[in-house]
Image 1 (cartoon, rainbow, N blue to C red):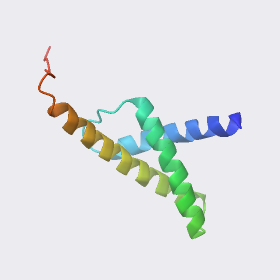
Image 2 (image 1 turned 60 degrees about the vertical axis):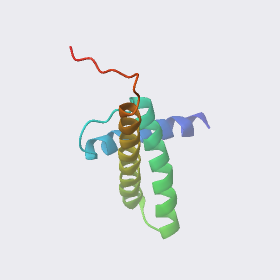
Image 3 (image 1 turned 120 degrees about the vertical axis):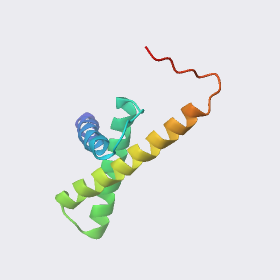
Length: 93
C-alpha cells in the first residue's frame, strides 16, 4: 500500500512537471497542486488507456495531456481569481 502511494506521488510529480512544461506562460499554481494534478492525470490516463485496451505508452500520453489540461485550467482559474480581488495589491520591487 505504501509503495503504491509513493509510486503515485513520483509518477504524479513527473506527469505534473511534464504538463507544466507543455502549458505556455506563467503557472501560478504551486508544486503541490501540480503534483496532485499529475496524480489525477496519471490515474485518469491509466483508466482511459485500460478501457481502450491500449498500452503503457498511450496511458502516459493520456496522463500528460489530461494533467496539462488540468494545469492550464487551474492556472487560468487562479489568475482570474487573483485579478478580481480589490484588496490584493501587487508590488513591484
